[in-house]
Image (cartoon, rainbow, N blue to C red; front, side, top):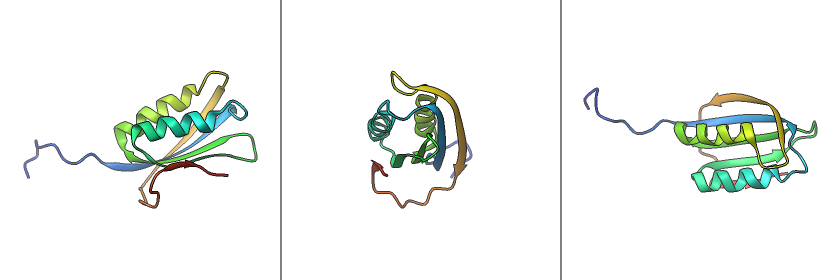
Length: 100
């Protein structure tokens, strides 16, 4: 395969912790719908410390689109910080869902 041929997009795992006013504003359900519409797999859940954890797997560009949205969140949310880790995908998720 030549150097200038397009290769298959790289699959990655996005692990994000969203801090701020992100619980009690339907953040998980908006994230669920956004991730499903983007064709990502993984999960979103509330954490005991008031943050929301998002783990999503898919193509880099699509994950960046989700990450951009996580910085804004739904109406009513006040995102103060998004802590991001890029990891190797595990392929363990069949779909995207809300977990508890």
